[in-house]
Image (cartoon, rainbow, N blue to C red; front, side, top):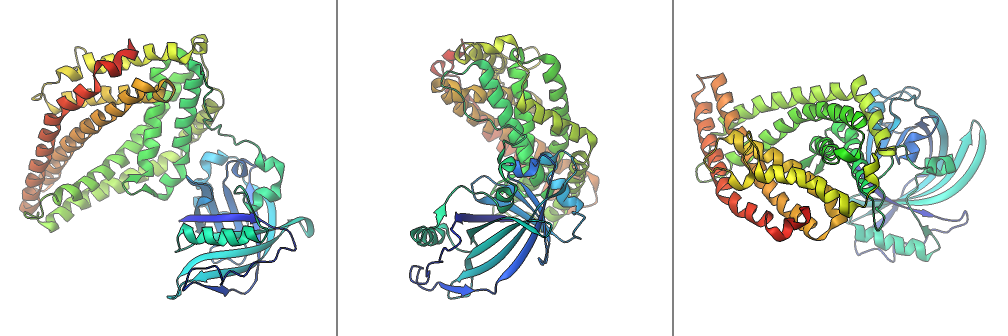
Length: 509
């Protein structure tokens, strides 16, 4: 689940303001009995979890005493996962969730925090809890000895909106509370060492006039960060958006990094980059099986519902989905096995090292705006011109087999990733080309998804020729998928003309 909260520093003698006079009509304050919470936080000796904004704790008295908190996309928002378990033995599932941060280094008790909490629920007239305010008096313990103390206010969003949190914040700051950056209790308790830079170096920002190596370093760090941030969410089977999954995002991280290492090949040491590309290919392949099953299941539901006036046999569609669900489950088990392997653990270590110090060649010291266009031109010209085995996008036969369209799609993805990697630096026409290529790639992706889906529906029907209802449903699904293929092929030439206009590509030389 996602936890969203705001924190405020207050002095020991701070007086909580009367909130009832500022809350919206119908919202009332319900005071809860005070509780004492004793939490033991576990970390590596060099505090890798705390430095990355991650925590693993055991808190006495909670129904689910073990909790992992992981950073999300916004400040003050975290993924919170709780499980039962004994005090001294963290559940293996939760230890696995922090693998990308601990990198299998032993986790030990790092700090004990005792909190006397006075909590207040903000409820509406239907008794829904909209938000909870916690007034915490905190002791940092060293055995029986109190090492330090502080007091803070937390306001956690429940079923209410952010405007309610804004109202409460105005009241608190008006009474003297200080809204600051979001710092968890255990990080404050651990002191300066917990605020040191994380093991995984973030992308940061590029200088005003970056070198080619600066751009490579930024791209590597961005993709490594994307990949590893989705590791725990893949293990949790967590969605990351209305129409997206953690498996997809982790796979994209693999693919983009492989593509960047290929595009920037002359700028990085081959002996360093090639082993990374090989291992990323392995991981992307494992994730790809699960992602393909996700896409097919979503496509089945969407294609079956395309024409409400001519519905398909729902029982037959359900039987097709059960086959896909079994494939999906097996693929996710393979992902779990891969993420638990020593091979993956070694890859994580290599990725963290890669983000820390990418191994660049002397050529990477040249100005980005001089060096990069020539490198991006290679995948671009391969997409436009093709070769003996792959058609060029401009000459793609509308009646060519699906396989030839798929080959162009692969070249299109490589060109798009290459342009994306430099668009933020070169701007202007490069950014416009990146946007146009995204639309081209969307069409080619839809073509491939429809073609693969059509083959899948037929193969599932062939598994049981006696199931005539599934055969009929599969046949109708295939016709709808082939219609989607024809629609893409008709739209592609116009999208390609817009992408390949000379004014958008002249910078490539």
